[in-house]
Amino acid sequence: MHKISRRSFLAAGAGLSVMPFPAWFEKYAAAQGAATATRFDVSSTAGKQMLNKYAHAVKQMKALPEGDPRSWVFQWYTHWVKGTTTKQNELNRIYPNPSDPNRAIAVKMWDTCQAHGPGMDENMFLPWHRMFVYFFEHIIRSVLNDSSFTLPYWNYSRANAHAIPPQFHMQGDPTFGSLFRPNRNPGVNQGQPIDQGQPDNPLGLQALAQLTYKPQGAAQGFCAALDLGLHGNVHVLVGNSTNMGNIPFAANDPVFWMHHCNIDRLWASWNRAGRQNPTNDAAWLNQTFTFVDVHNNQVVQVVAKVQDFDDIAKLRYTYDHFEPVPGATGPVAAAPGTESMSAAAAVPSPTPLAAVAGNVTLETEPVRVTLGPPNAAGPTPTTTAAPSAAAPSQPLGLAARVAALPGNRRLYLVLRHLRADLQPGVLYHVYLDLPEDVEPTDEEAHHVGTINFFDAAAHGDHQAAAPQPEKFYSFDITAKAKELQERGQLTANPAVTIVPVGSPVSEAKPAVGEITVQEQ
Ligand code: C2O
Image 1: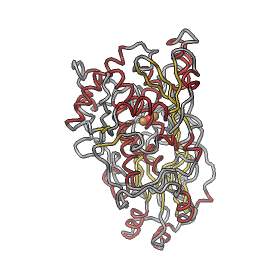
Image 2: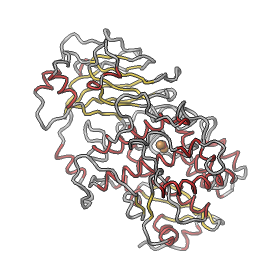
Image 3: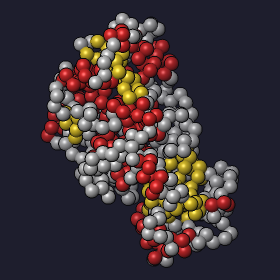
């Protein structure tokens, strides 16, 4: 184990200690009991008991002065400072004394949600949020003085659990009123399933089918598939731009933590089935983030490394239920460091087969664009892609390629460089070669996936992030394309149709920078 020098405790000066995670864990977390803690489904008996404790804790945290690291505002701002102001303004308002030691922690911690700000690394999404949830759970133990507390999770993918748990919309209730937020999307606080009216399954566990953590050629990889897919869909379906739908406000909704506890459980499920984290990537393992804990009114600043958080067994917690992973044979022994070797051997680089020419601006109505030969995809003006204007002169021959596709090759529809001025507030559904006269919601055979702009919208005191190569959507269309081809429904120059469900915010201006079909 790690030896802790006395100096490290005193580094930050009076009243504030700084500890590396292993030292903190040994001193405080492991000392709370050797047993593994279990996190429960919020709808189970044990989960409901935990939710009751949680509601009390939220009430107490909201009553604390904002500058206290245990306060609701401090924890919310760790994710992102509310969008109507800036981090600097809030630091000055909450900590008028510039030498307040809690201010120094806030400087390090606030606005750190990974990877939803400019220049952040997409692959930090899972570990940063695991840390955030973990330390929040410890803060609640401290507030309640109850070391048996564990955060419950909301498993919205389960049948009959698509609505927000009822305790979150009991406005004025003496126990659960603290969990209420008035500004969720219409219907959510009436207990309506959040995916009501959506085609296909935006709450599905498709991300678990990814074989690698990072993108692998045209395949999205588990981290981005979960972040940009299910994770973002739930944010957008629960709340608007002053609530769960917008990064600077998301963590002010108490249901945020039940959402991220579930995301953490899905990561643990994926690993449990033998899927590997990028444990051969030293930069990923050694990345550190600062969090805070409070013991006996002593504030402890904890410096955590990703390698301390890549396995929940090391952290001594578990879940009452894990999800099965498609194609996995069950729990297997971890073989760290094998990912990139097998990836390099197994996947030839993708071949672009088709592309949409230029930027596609989305509208309140469905937008239909035509796929053409990839080289023809030059930059075109940023206007609505009119169906006829984008039609290539030569037939693409995609149908023939689909018919001849070898069994070990896959086809992906890849959408890159999403951006929006504001979060549009709706999900967009993506269809392949949807006939122009067909109602999209009736055509499951053409539906290939769902996109959202939770991550792509400008937010808070910064504009939309610069395009990141690791952030893209990709949908495996192999089966759909073959089925359409066999039914004679794949046209010579197939179209991609993107359809909003509901009414997008009119000033949002969402756009997709690049759409291609790739084979690998
Ligand atoms: Cu930091 Cu669910 O977002």
